[in-house]
Amino acid sequence: MKFTLPRGTRDILYPEIILWQQIEDTARRIFSVYNYREVRTPIFEETELFERSMGESSDVVQKQMLNLASQRVDADGKPLLSGFSLRPEGTAAVVRSYIQNNLYKKERISKFFYIGPMFRGERPQKGRLRQFHQIGVEVIGANTASPYLDAEVIALSVGLLKSFGLKMFKLKINTLGSSSDKNKFSGILRSLLEPKISLLCDDCQQRFDRNVFRVLDCKNKGCREVVNSLDIDYGYLSEGSIRYYEEVKTILKDLGIEFEESMSLVRGLDYYTHIVFEIASDSLGSQDALGAGGRYNNLVYELGGPQVDAVGFALGIERILLAGSYEENTITSHIDCFIISMQSVGLRQAFILLNELRSNGICCDLGYIGGSIKSQMRMANKAGARFVIIFGEEEVRNNEITVKDMNDSSQERISLSKVLQYLKEKL
Ligand code: HAM
Image (tube, protein in one colour):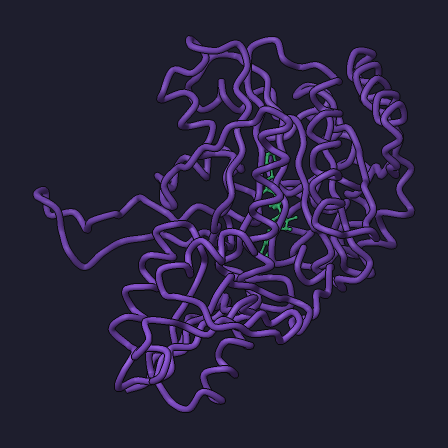
């Protein structure tokens, strides 16, 4: 029987894995510069947590949740894990953890980051997977609704993408206003759309009742035409919401961060209030969002915690890699040293030397499977070894090795007892 991986998932192998590690390492370095701390939550949580946070009417909850339930039953005869789902995103779980661990009693402001897999039952296509990976941040705390923090997370998301080597991307921002502004806006939108409802796609006809904002960012051509014909402005926003939005934009300009304002940017998840943003790349086709985020000042309260403010974003690693169009053959990895041994004679000493070098922090490997010097040299080259150590018959007899510097192809014979010192000096 042959097993294949589930649709919409990927194996990440060498050399691509090197890129993933570089992205993750860079992100961790930048997060520590910004003073964000890592949080790791389970990859499954109660389904209701996601329903309550993202909204029952959101596309993710309606169409993409991956629910768990086992054939096995617990002591009450209920299927194990019934009522749990794989996490489709990170925000809800971080908020759950913030509340459950009483962090609001322990610190004024909590700045989290996470890197990990998320799961959505989508129709797979380029840039859209069922298991994908996000790098995200959430900033949560009482009275932290400061435009400077909105600007900080936006600057952080842009800074991360730049440090991954991406240049061509566009930041779009918008404000949804407070919850009451949002309510007003949905009323206005419904009254504007009602006469044109028959021109909307099937999905948007349902969204009209469920989540009317989503009509604004539908990609269907007919819906786009309807939306473009609507006469909408920011009249529904309170003075405070407008002032907040203006402040965020001024700070972004101070920082030299370019952005475009887009009234049709509404985001698909219910929890957002005030600032929302999205970063898109032209090189990605229909799944062009590299990342997105925004403020969600009511979610902690709605999930049973105190009334505290919050803002965050998540970037999709797969899309970052697609947009960067990294060439696999430019990815290189290196080791310090590769040991070649002629199987019959030197393997035992070679293995002892290998372990001595490794325990002194020298990154090395051994041609375990033997073969000719030539074939082992090829293995050393593939591993990107800087030095090659050869344990030939004569070397073993004299307690020596031949060491070859792959940079200039020079080689010399040295005593086995001096190898560690020699490499330490050269590396
Ligand atoms: P989101 O827009 O649903 O927001 O996802 C953020 C990013 O995850 C997307 O821009 C995209 O790069 C990536 N992504 C989403 N779905 C897929 C998929 N099926 N395949 C590949 N990549 C995907 C959130 O998840 C919010 N939790 C962001 C946030 C954090 N807002 C506040 N805090």
